[in-house]
Length: 200
Image (cartoon, rainbow, N blue to C red; front, side, top):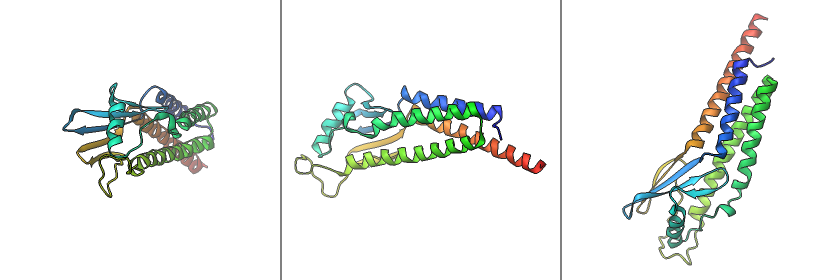
């Protein structure tokens, strides 16, 4: 069964939105404290991690040094080398689905989308866990037994006198929109198939 033109258009738009991840930040982590009234922030992009402002990453790394955390160095974050290929592959797969228009390919693409999304969030959580829990207490200036400094995956968390907020940035919301468009295409396809089966 071929996909309808509206469903194929939805998939093509979703695939195009995924390509925008190469030019938009995926996630943002903000830190607010009395000594930093304007806050500090990190932008997690598809290929790197940067500060929201010019010196934010350097300032965050300086603060992390006091509590024994590793410096955030994009060159050492392995997932950043994998993510561009995964996103490009998922987008290309989406364009193939839109061009060929086969129902089975649509289902396979959406399954891949879900697996990619879950794997991406797990890897992001693990990166946060690794930085927040594996501390160099021997060289830490501030030592609080049992304390860890993992920011939330999403939401707000108090870390000493810092209020950490972790939320999707533009790219993260684009992924959500792309997924919804794909889900609508699946819903339309299932409904059309059900109608065709009922008509016999």
